Image (cartoon, rainbow over all chains, first blue to last red; front, side):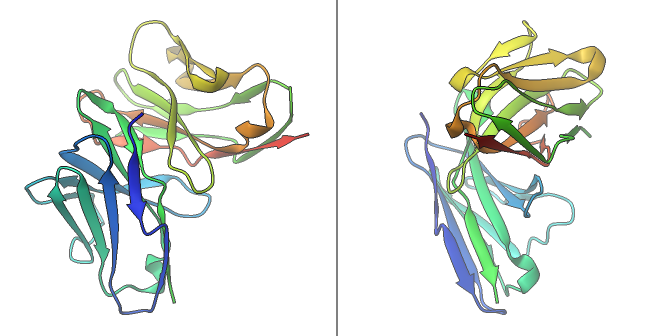
Length: 116
Length: 114
């Protein structure tokens, strides 16, 4: 089946620094990728839609200057959390729909971010 | 906008017992419904989905779900649970017109007793 990877799987950073999270589709091309945030014991909340070759589309309430998204190629999207604060600590998950199967999304394993 | 409710935060069942996880959705049109399973350290895996047609859908790992429009429900079932089924289960609903407008429930954590 289709595989989506994320790197790193977990990261600890100091408050005020920036952290980049990578999302890769390993065996298929993805013109669109999605970034979610998951709080403990809560649902996945869609943050933004990453579009290859164009700007990302952010959900209401998500600060685009804080969560920078770059879809550099058909297999890579990155999420950079800028000037991280402890409240940004969360589990970040990406997903990508496979071509021809737009409603079936393949999810990455997630990245645990802890800001100290 | 659509929404999903999973009433049970945590369920414990004995191995070999039957399982039903509840999911209720709110959406004005015909929804696209999904069940995903999330194991620690792994990504969400699609168990099954409903788009149209037969309201009883079969999925992987012996799971099935039934779409009941009158009850706005899409409950997940398995006749005999295995210890390896212990995980977090998410119900999700998508709007038929927008690929990225998917909403997830809060999840139900399944514990399997030996």
